Length: 261
Image 1 (cartoon, one colour):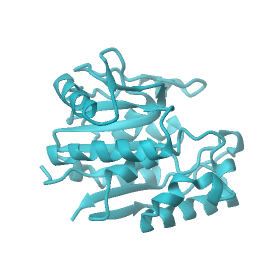
Image 2: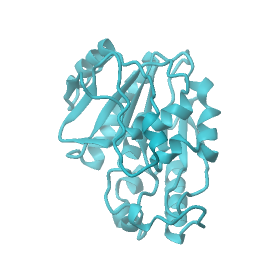
Image 3: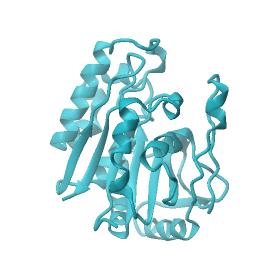
Image 4: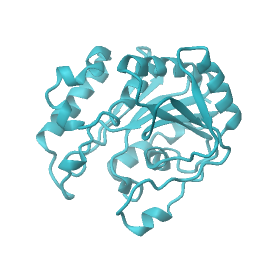
């Protein structure tokens, strides 16, 4: 087991990514060994948006197909992840000592923002998974603080994964294959620059500092998990940028890995 578990931000794109790994899926597949032997993985996804934090507490997690209008074979896919109820209780108790409280949910499974990237990253489903909801009442600063609170788990062999999207405008999607739309490329490049520089102030205020933000993110939920990842990582981590072609003209599939040297 690594001395300190890694942190990731993964752009999860369309649910069809489950059936067509492409470059982004292969990028995650190259990292499987980095997660080998971890005690567990905690993943946060924008597709479980709540008021107040919730954490999965079942020992077996269902695969939630929380989408419609896709080919029937996609709905037959399952990711047979095991949960970890004892660890969920430990995490809830630990967060109670900070400004955060979390409710345990023993009926929730994994939505596609969680199980689709995990299919590529941990294909054998041999590491327990916990999913944390995205509390939409939290400010940018509080999401960073949540990441910092969760970072303590890295020393206990728990990897932290924030799933979302560098860009996420479903209204602008083009049929594949389509060239990248200019604003999506510009915003992806800007975010990469801020992440590499760990410019957390800029990442906390993209709507004020980047004119492409509103079009890249008509709603914020796919961007916000990046703040949790920034909080859970630190200057001492080595950053790896996982570049991948923009899909459907506007959906960035770029991801980031932070790992202790």
